[in-house]
Length: 91
Image (cartoon, rainbow, N blue to C red):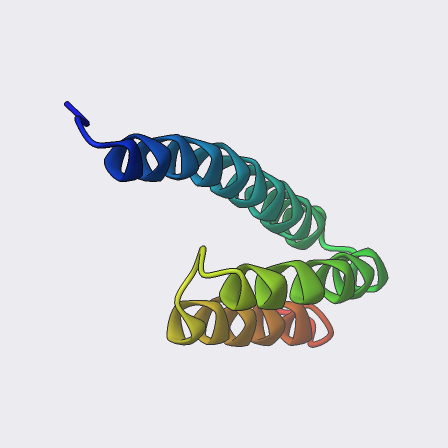
């Protein structure tokens, strides 16, 4: 339990940051889900648009400290390769 005024303030700030970060993570997951759904539908044009919308949100998550930059880089790389794979028809 926080006793000093400084520790009480830090606890309040941590709670506020937790709420902001939780909302930001949720927003990022929504964008990722839209990309996944577009890939599942098989429509490359929709998937490209969804990925273009998701990339700035992921990058913002890095700058705000919600996600690690390598994690975001990996996610974008894997999603973009899957979107590109939609163009080639299966043999």
